Image (tube, rainbow, N blue to C red; front, side, top):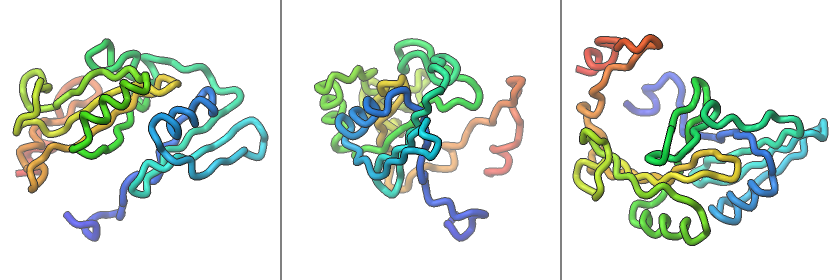
Length: 196
């Protein structure tokens, strides 16, 4: 499918807007630790909020609001309480579970060590594959994405990720599971029948 075959020519993520408790700590983390340039700052007209934008690369931005009267964070509802493999990774319907930033595959291990050197707690490297455990201890031909997870100062779960795909990318057999409805039943024939 080409972009001209689509209903809307969506070209990627323009920005993702999140809410922080302390904009200064957010700037220190995203600009000074992760190295994302701060490209736009706004004090909103009512004086009780701010909106800052960080450049994620590729024309994509990560934005934060600071609201003077924002409710406190609700881990386990609005976001996971723990990093993958370290506890519950669940979050509520409508929440943002985590955001994954694309990083170069050839720098993946280096970035893992660099985050740890900066004092960031990282939940190891996950080589996601199609095995029963869905994680391989090493990179194999079946690993399709590599991930490392960590939290920002507000407990927002972040991921550095890189694809590990063959040159042709995903194949039709990579869509192999029918989606589940709210009651847990599978929507039989919704995807697989349409794909074949």
